[in-house]
Length: 178
Image (tube, rainbow, N blue to C red; front, top):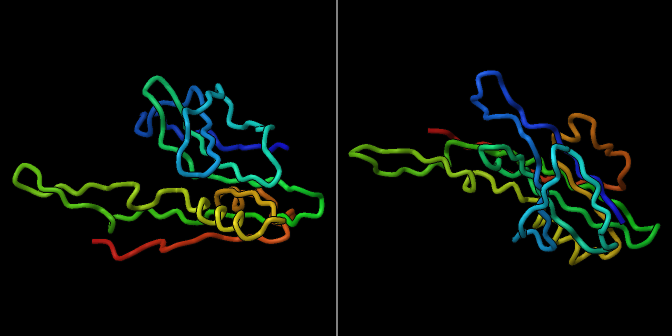
């Protein structure tokens, strides 16, 4: 059983403030969504077909971009659970939680003043799909699922009509900023 994972190229700009362009991508895979062994280098491609998925078992993935300067932050985690039989229902999990908020910053004393650190993992761990996938796997043995970022739906890359149901995962998107 297989699934295709695809993404967009990393954004770059002429002045380099977003970093140098990607020269390659790395795919990370996990069977439980919490720990990921060393990634597999994909070369300079933004789509890959994973063809060793086991029907009924959940697999979790994320991608990073690489170049001479190192490795990017990871994408959101996506999960897939292939059908075990032709009649299995198909569900789509859409991660719509994109929070990055100044209210989660941490105050740190520094050189007689205060430094504010923005810790990305306090804002959003980008793995909301893991809890949903674990719950589905534990309670619905005959439901297969795919997942994607909300942007894939917004851009028309993923067809909601191809699924029996869609779960849009959200969260507290903003708070009062100081």
